[in-house]
Image (cartoon, rainbow, N blue to C red; front, side, top):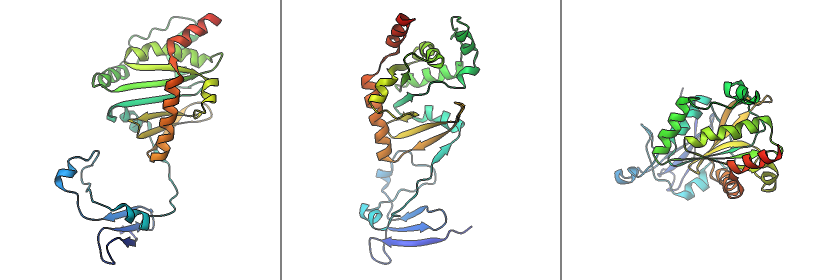
Amino acid sequence: MMRRLRFNGTGSGVNGCPAIHEDLDSQEVIVHGPPLSHEDVGQLQHLGTGEVAIVVPPQLLVDFGPKEVTRVPDIIGLAEFDRLFTQFEHTAWRLESRRRYASDELTQTYAQFTRGEPVQWNGVDAQWCAERLEQTALGKRFERVRIVDNPPTVGQLYLLDNARRNSGVGENIRCLWRSDGERLRLPAQDFWLFDSRLVALLNFDDHDNLTDVELITEPAAVNRYAQARDAAMHHAVPYEHIVAQVATTD
């Protein structure tokens, strides 16, 4: 179906180039302008097949870009979310803030843990472990900070045990008491931050099931999550420290 386009304006006279149009139905913005040189195109990252790079003066966007845009959440499914863990370039960082995760409680390792048996992590999630090892071998970093209540919940104690498996495949696992997280005003959310430019916000239902993932790329919002990461990493301690503290209180 043909788009209904509205001409917003141009920075080079009535019939000039570049110019901005707006799709009246989807609110998408269409920009046309002079092409980028072949040499400069070679410097671009994430330019997809069939995409064309053009040059746009910043003032054109200020003058004729949409002034009031309602942000529509960019929701992706879990399969697309999984692909982010091989597509990132250098760092994947996680804040883990919840008291329980329903998916953990469905596993054999959780059943072993709650029965008081030593958890046998060898061979568990072999494909996941192999992928982590493969990515860390490429020089990529996986890091996470886990918020822990005092005293920890059963789910948090399980994850402290699970940290042995995660750290064994290259993750840097650190922990922070919830009181410290609240003092630092960390977001009460679970999220991954990829390459300091993409946030994957994890959405859970009322029964602690992961339902979907919201992608956030707006620079100011991403920067807020990056600031939370920096604060959490500065104050968090290696997970072994929390394990030792919990053991002394049992």
